[in-house]
Image (cartoon, rainbow, N blue to C red; front, side, top):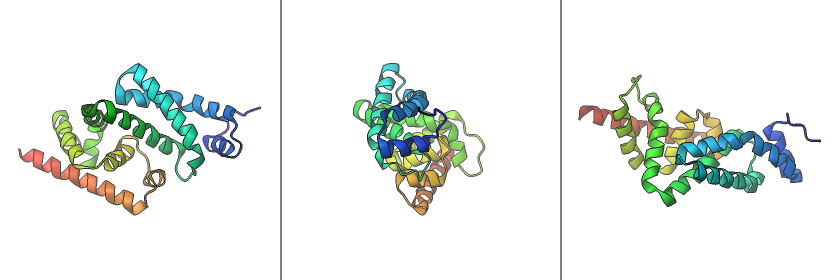
Length: 188
């Protein structure tokens, strides 16, 4: 009999050693609604979000053997959801990628700018649009993980396979870009 109160990490350890699919169904039950909600935030279409959710679950199942537990499962899962949705958007709606990331980060832009509590919404979108043309997809994901999803540096580091200093440096560079763009746009 499977204990439904077992932690995600314990479920994953059992899955990695035994491959018992009933344990994966528990993991799926716990996270499917959250995955679907995140997918909907990217694509805004119920059917597409459900397809992407299924694709994410398949990827999780196939990649579970590589999960090392060095980061939280939720951080690792977010990276898979984000990459799956971004791949879909890149293939199908290139202009949607910028819009989705901009919407996801608009509220957090003030948090990245030094000495500013709130930025007018139209300026926030303008900063993000220009910023997202300048920074790499990896930097975009780092900003989303840190400022939107509120993941720790340690979790980001282990889930992306980067050193702590690399994560901090890339976040610093991205924040510097944001600050430079803000100063430039304020002068216009």
